[in-house]
Image (tube, rainbow, N blue to C red; front, side):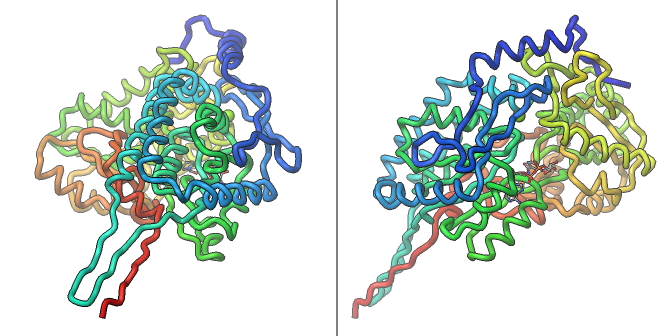
Length: 505
Ligand code: NAI
Ligand code: MG
């Protein structure tokens, strides 16, 4: 029951050689921190390696930033803010963000290749990510003009509300969409007039660093600073730093809670985009073929490494058979393999640690009585044996309160539940700590509306998945987070309101 792996005569060596060739053009041997517009090693002089999850080989040695580097970066960011950035007009920031978008588009292929090498996502997915990065910067370039204060006028009273940037913000991002997550953080922060200290994930630092090289002459020194390193060593001091006035984090709920605790020490404002365990509700009228397409995309895109992945399927009894049959075919028909090859559908996970985590959940699911309808293992292909591959997996028969159902697996694993009673189904659909996203598949508008309203989550897709147009706020209910990204209101989370009252009597 394993999905198609790519058996076009590949060997470990042929894949490695393709990746070495691609890396030769875009990957440096050693990367540095970017502080105050200067490239520099970590104060400790230490480094760590970032690996290629397709081949298991080292891609580059990366500066291992720590507390001293965070201190320097926060100082550089304040210098930039005080000396220059706080004086910029909206129009200037708008021009700058637009220029960044242009540069990203000019370097799309190079950035996408870096993303594929460092993260393992397919080149097609990486190209879409990079396209989205440019779109983020363009959107927030425009959004700066939509932000306005308001006034309160009465006889003898004039009051106004102005919105001021925080100054310096700290931003910590994950590895699943490395450059896209950087753009979701940087674009609104800069548009609103802040300077940033950004910490990329230790698994995937390369695309963000290259991005800063590409825009180095556009962004004034110190406005964006990047400190690579581990969470405990670089992320933790950033989240505790007194000079950071706002924290924005995307990643696991456990670390999000820790960041919130750290933020409490300085009463630092915080927005969090955390995990998800999103339900896909399929009604009895769904067209099975269309449903299969949406569901497969919802769970298998980006190898399941999406916080918004649809990972719990609630399929109505009347259509369960054809849909599950179609899903088994889709899962087994996917080409798992080298993400640099155009025909690959599913690349590796980001790291061996992530594979172990997924396999551990699958093991526990087995013990919990799960039936595996598809996948559940590594692909049966020697050429892929050094990579972090997991086959697209369908699981049925788990109790809804099993930990593999309640917790985020973050892999290509879909858990199936059949239903015929809407209310009982919806109780289960909402019976998780998460509330990031959800979806409904039906051609009945009233049912779509009812289900969209009943799911406790911040983003609902009807007959589609993953598409997130800038302009629609994105963020979680319950333990999936605080705050909203991707929209004009995001600027409110990067500014603070100041009321000014004039005495006119
Ligand atoms: P993580 O939450 O540890 O990593 C995300 C970022 O936080 C990284 O930059 C990391 O260096 C940083 N970090 C880690 N510990 C920190 C600390 N104590 N203080 C400050 N920053 C810290 O996630 P991890 O371990 O890579 O993945 C574990 C699970 O988290 C995944 O299996 C998945 O379930 C979930 N996750 C969710 C994401 C999302 O998009 N919501 C993204 C990545 C992971
Ligand atoms: Mg890597």
